[in-house]
Length: 400
Ligand SMILES: Cc1ncc(COP(=O)(O)O)c(C=O)c1O
Image 1 (cartoon, rainbow, N blue to C red):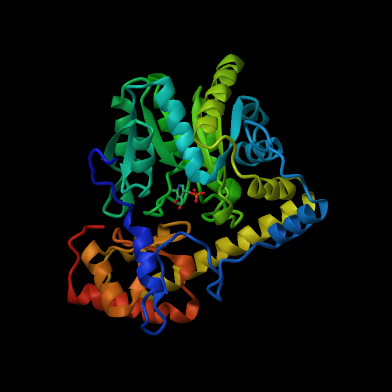
Image 2: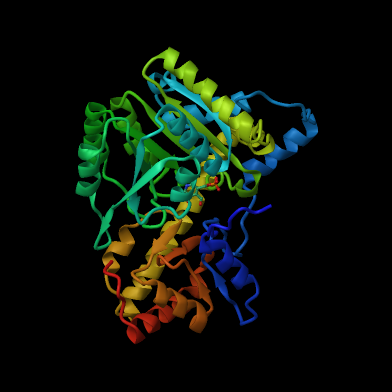
């Protein structure tokens, strides 16, 4: 029996995608969900993924349970790739997770178990699911504005690190921030790390879009520099974007500890939390990634294809910004070109985004975010003209 009916609502992204699917106007554009698409509008299965899947099918791996930590080869491959440095890898405990979201949740549970009263500080605008995941684990969330006039407000993050209580957590996106596309300069990562190490504030880093900003190593550089400085940190890794394994729900939770005994304790907690939620993560995506990372040729081809994806996103951003600059009066245009990753955050408010959807059949997110990969070069003039029309007819109330 229901005892009460508190209001719990799904974020608007999936509802908008459903509305797009039901839109019967000519060529409605879905720029809502963060999924990579090619020029044909298809979310492709990567070449290396297809080859790895064929090999796995030939080998007919058993469907037996894996292990409490999931696929150990996958976990090791992800730690190697993400951390890069043997000294960091030596401090890491990892567990396979149900996508990047699952990794966020496992780490949130670990943080709640090991520090029941602690607060997670979250820069806004935030990834739409971050507050929900953190609160579901019972953590307190404190938001602060991370963006000012379309630029990263590094001073705000540094202030939070300086004033947070010891044991508090700073949730940071590793690169290609969703939804702002803003990157944090290397100097800020390093300055933050020193403050956090000194004050006992824990970094919780979400790595969902590495490889899609400036390149794999470039995108991981800031986080790696921070990890060299802080004694403890947690990283949620998603394989959804970099390998295009969205529906396979593949991710990894990594925790860096200050000594092996703490690492062992962390492993135990993560395994208990996972076991209580779903016992073990699904195996297929992790097997695919492990096969790719463990084979030099496949790994190299995966890097080539990821770079092709990155270049397509970079080109689309440049083309759209150039078109907006040439044909519209949209404000803050030069800043848009500085953004990185899958998204472009337009300086449009929720009402203007609604006009884009109702008047022009262009579906983005109320925060102004659009998925660049949902565009094609030939549609850019149409999209730019629509954005220009919306801005000209209803001036923005947001100051991006
Ligand atoms: C910032 C960020 N973190 C985590 C995720 C979750 O990724 P996954 O689909 O692997 O759960 C997303 C997905 O869009 C994201 O944008």
